[in-house]
Image (tube, rainbow, N blue to C red; front, side, top):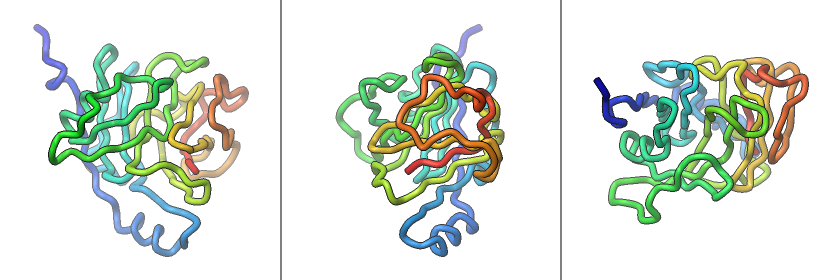
Length: 195
C-alpha cells in the first residue's frame, strides 16, 4: 500500500529557544545564532537516505524519503518557498510566491557522498550571507546527520565550515564555498557554521 508524498514527508516545527535569542543579543553585530538542532521541538532524526531541509529563521525541519521532492515538501508543509540556485540539488519550486508563504534561500547543502552525491541536508535562511555574520547549526546528530557529511556546496554568498565537535570545536574543514571531498573530516562533522 503506497502513501502520498504529503503523507510520507515528515515535518518538525521548532521554536527558537531563549538561549539562542540571548546568545544572539549578547554576541554583538558580528555573530548570529539560529535555533540549534537541539532547539527543534519534537525532532525526529532523518532515516538512512533521507534528505532534509532546515530553515534558520523559522527553525523548521522537513525530511523526505529518497525520490521525493524536498523543496515541494518544504513549501507544502512549512509554507516556505525555497530558492535554490541552478547548481543546487532539489527541484526549483514555482517562481511565484503564494500568499502567506515566505521565501527562503539555500545557504548550504551537505551531501552523504563524495562528489555531491547521495542524500543531502540543506540549510536555508531568509537572507544571503554577508561575510561578517556567522550562523551556527548543530548538533547534526539531533537531526540524523552526525557523521554523514562527505562533501558540501555553499550558496547565497555563503561559505561553510564543518566542525568535528557538536559545539563548533575540534577539527574543522573550511570556510570554503565548495568541497567535493573532505579528507580526514569525511563523515566526521557534528556541527556547522556559515558566514
